[in-house]
Each structure stands twice: as structure tokens, then as C-alpha cells.
Length: 111
Image (spheres, rainbow, N blue to C red):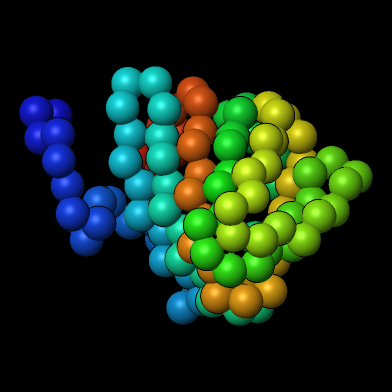
């Protein structure tokens, strides 16, 4: 893809389970970055994947579990999720969360 600059509304969006989520993403050859808008009460169920992930809480408050550790995260906090470790999250307030995935999320591009 030759385009290098985008507005948020130009990013591809993921199908989401309900109106508590809006997820947009962009990928390079090696990484995927997802921009998540979560309304209070939104829940990301427990799951795992091969991708290493960095999660940055841009706004709001999110309860996140990684393995057997659960932390209430606030704006400005960052979490590191290793490959193949079960994790889940719940929005305590309206949140904006940025995820950086390595390697690229081929499954996102296929949706």
C-alpha cells in the first residue's frame, strides 16, 4: 500500500460483538496497531494468541488480567502481554486503548 497518512475514519474496522466497542486498525509488514474505543461495561473475554502485545491506556479506566494477575489500569499505564498467555479486560469507564501486536495480525486483515 502506497498511502502513508490516514485519518482515523479511514482505518479498517473490526467486526465487534456489540455497540460497546469500536476497533480500528492499521498494519505494516511486521506489526498491527489497533485503536479501541470501549464504553463502560465492555468486556474482552479471556483469550490467547501468538502475538506479543503492548496495551496503552490512553483514556479511562480498564481492569485487565494477564495470566493470574489482575490490575486496574488508568490513563497513561502500559501493559505487556506475552505470546500465548491468557488475558482479558473490562472497561470500568469509557476508555481508549491502543494495542501494538507483533507479529502482524493476519486474522484482522482477513475480516
